[in-house]
Length: 98
Image 1 (cartoon, one colour):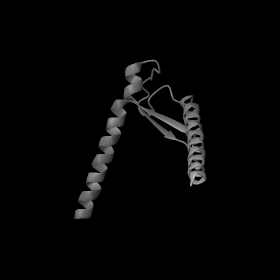
Image 2 (cartoon, rainbow, N blue to C red; image 1 turned 90 degrees about the vertical axis):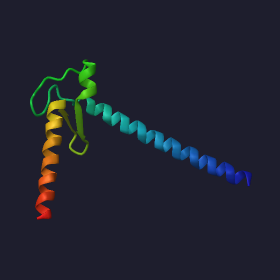
Image 3 (cartoon, rainbow, N blue to C red; image 1 turned 180 degrees about the vertical axis):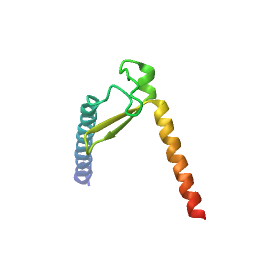
Image 4 (cartoon, rainbow, N blue to C red; image 1 turned 45 degrees about the vertical axis):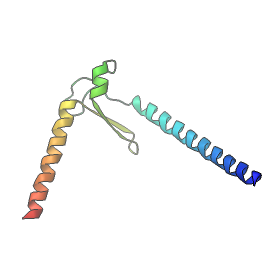
């Protein structure tokens, strides 16, 4: 019975190590993508200051890993995009009801 418990613990430790390594790889990939962060909003071209804490916390970043692309949006453009999507969904729902 003791050997069985040790076997389970070893298996658990190996899974945790593997998971940790994958997490480290994912973090490294994300850090590499940070270098691709644009210097302005994709939509309105408003400049983005990486050293401005307010901007860093309020702007929106969209990462497309497959395409190795990073897109940056200011809060105003992000809100406009959300409103457009919301309006579009509403129109589609109204069309489907008729």
